[in-house]
Image (cartoon, rainbow, N blue to C red; front, top):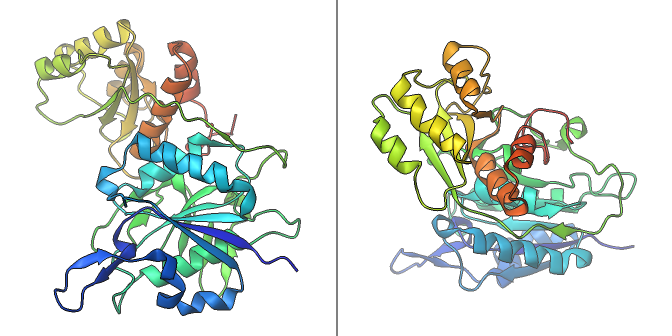
Length: 347
C-alpha cells in the first residue's frame, strides 16, 4: 500500500515561531523537527518531508523573486509528492496564493497555503489545527485516485478557500481570511466536507506541470477617494514604465464623473496604459452599466474587473503583462476567467 507523500514548505511567518522561555521573544523554529512539536502528525502514516527557506521570508517582504523561487521548488519536487502545504505569513498569503494560481499551469495536485495568528509553540495556537487539516486535505484523493482538491488553496480556521478568491480580513481573529465572492471548497467539522461542485478539476488529467515565471510588475494601484486631486492622478499616471493601473472604485465600480478626473484617465488609456476597475468592497462585483459613473468609465476605456479581489487582480496583471506586449490581447484576457479568479465560465 502506497502512503500519501506531502512536502511541507516553510517560507516564514508566525506559525513557525517559538517563544523563548527566558526572554519571551519570538524566534524561528526548526521545522525539520515538526513531528516533535505536533506528534499527532504521526497518526496519519504519511510520508511527510519538510523544506525550509533560508533565509526565512517575512511575508511583508514577499516579492516576485520569492514567487519564482517557490514555483520552481514546487516544479522540482512535483513528481515526488502527492500534495504540498506552504506555511506562509498571513499578511501577503492571498497575494502569493493568487500568484501561484496563475504561475502553476495544468496543476493536478493540491498546493495549500496556511499559517496561523499565534505561533505554533503557544498553548492557544491556531497553527496546529491549520497545519493538521491542511496536510490531511493535501493527501486526500477521490475514488478515481486523483487529488480531491487539485487547486491552489488557502486553509484557515476550518475553511478551505480557492486561493485567488481570498483576502485577509481580520488581524485579531483566528478566522483571518474571507472569500466573499466564491463559496468554500471544504469545511472541516467532525468530518471534512468537500464541496466538489466548487472545485476546479482538469478537463484532461495527465498533463505536465508548467510554470509561467515571467512576470511584469509595472502596475500601480490607485484608490479612488473623495478629494483626489486630478493633478496628482495625472502625475501618477505618467510614472516611467507604467503599463497598467488597478483603479479601486466605489461600490459597483463608480468614480467621479468630473471632467478633470476623467481626462487624466483618458490620456493614460490613449497612450497605452491598461486600467482595470476593481471595487473597494470585499463583496459584490463591478457593474459599469449600473450607474452613470460606471458607464462613463466604461466609455473612457476602463475594463471591468468583475468580482475579482485586489490581490488576484494584481497578480493576474503581473502574469498577463509578462506573457504579452499586445494590449488588446491582455484586455481580452482580463475580462475572462482563466484561473477561477472571477465568476465567469472558464476559458
